[in-house]
Image (tube, rainbow over all chains, first blue to last red; front, top):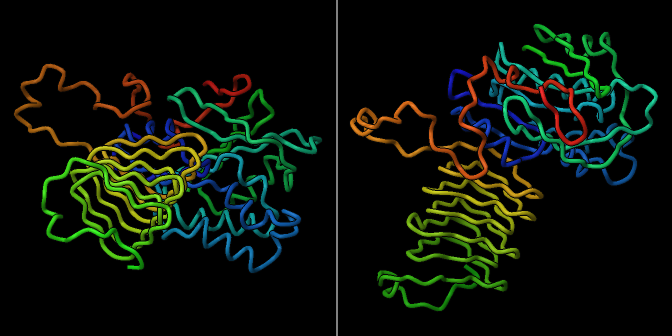
Length: 177
Length: 172
């Protein structure tokens, strides 16, 4: 963050605090709400079955992840990847890889409680360097659960993957492109 | 232009201090140049330029246009890039898809925004900076911004969270 003029992608939906935090460093922020985009594209009917529908998938990718190559210096993906089924998840991760510049970082969160049928979802807002405020967005059934090995496999095209297990049954994953 | 306000063009140059309103049933296709504040509660497609004035897109407003204004308040729907000299307020229930260049931005919870935010700060003349004792202080911040005591992190992700604390807040 020291070097001003970076371009960050935040997929938690626009919030005043995150926009202010990022832009006060002199960076640009690109906001979108990936969960909302998923609901728009796959929410009519079975959310996960719809993710196998080629037309809906194409619409989702066009509306939510249509960015130029190496456009971003960082991506805040939060917990959104937990709600994508296998093939679409791999496509989305490939897109993220495509959109990020070499050396860019990606932050993602994954629940580690494998027995939970549903998990809470949040809107994530950066309040300051040490605080993220969570706005509840209900509960959802995750598409799958991830362990360290499956996460390493998921981000195999990236340069490095670091895991931080937290007290809240979450894996914080920082991936370097 | 399907419907336009019935106003003689020669009166456009006259100084105005009021607030023009395009009502719910008004549809405009084309270019709007305004020298007074404008509220749009109808539909507009084209371009809107009112660099010294405020544009308000009302709750029923549907605008598909590039916008240049001193200040923009969005309560309805706006598709298009926005450039403001001062600030943009995106209120709850608003929907904005487009890139924003502004000095200050306010986004209410519940608003949907998709696009890029580029904060453009007014440049201070170098002489003024050199003679000001607080020149080394952090930049002025917009409404609701974070503490100026933040020291820069080393990378975007390094400023990211460490998940540890209770419900509703994560603290490192």
